Length: 467
Image (cartoon, rainbow, N blue to C red; front, side):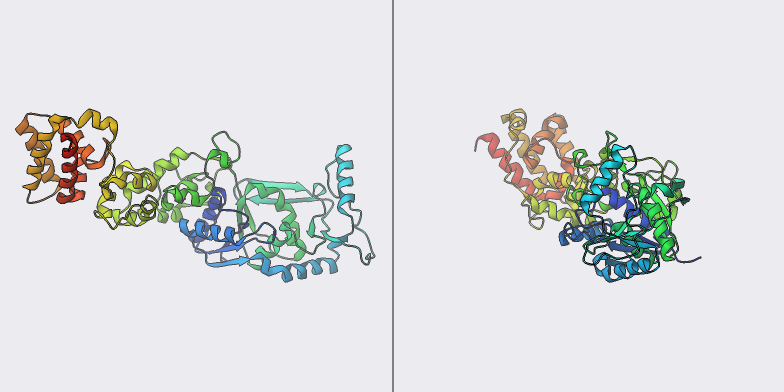
């Protein structure tokens, strides 16, 4: 069996879209499963719209998702001599021809065809010219067959066929000398010996034209798999109105790459009822034949659920590293306080994103927060002062400042004073974090440590006393 070679070929005209990321992921998984090669090619022949910023965004998105490539990145713009060489080959073999029709003439032909109820394809005016017209600009068209059928067996959609009479003579080189997409992609895939092309199903109609070009140039035709598009909840094509469509936007919102990979692969592919896969499982179990034929619907809640799962399953040390940029955005110095992994551990179960975790972590590193006015009115009353004092005494007496020891101290306090935890817990929570929402106060106190806990309770005590 020959080596399987797959590629991802984005255009650098914007960020890495979640749809493009899923296509890249499917190619990457199949290459890894079959121990083949995964090639990254940047299709930058649209000079006006291609930018280095977009190239960087694509590479960052791929790297964040962990989709490493074996060859590349290659740039189409480096291949213009190769494209011209192939244009000349087709011209010399009579498989292409010069078209001298002006844009105005082509538009008039198009309007006439539409008015007569015909498909607006090129009418072949220049197809049989035998003489060149010196000095007149020309495009180069591929001389497509007029009869017969071009068919292929799509690995996802099954057999697909097109009547050749429906296909017009494709322009392969514009009058300014630049090659067109359908031509360059064939040359690139052939020269890179790509064996399987997995791409979005918006390319289905390009496939018969490309197959004819492969055959005309004498290159082997690769296998094709066209992945259905991703839709929003309203069943229209996924766009910004449905939320973020950039892969890196999800990183910036605090999603983990493992969650994004798991979610994207399940957006159109299934393996029984299993929802959560390790990367090793995905590589082992993925098959392009199990990609569904219908469009996937992007569900942000499902992605959030997955992200929560991966946050819960991740090592606190690993999450702590990822959390640092989010804390710095909130002007928090993660080195100027308690152990960040210990902080993370208290927040994992309640955080759906790193952004949410960062918001929840701020109080650990800032003791000068304002108290929530509603919490003050409800819990910071004069009768809490002696309870604060008794708690400080018990915490000061602890030899081991652990979760269990702290919990025992609270229980002793409740027993000594004949109160319930609900009468001391909320006032302590307000003292420690400024409000009534936080992880377990035993965990919080353990992470803050004895000195910082005393400092914060004393501050609240002074507030209660009006000091």
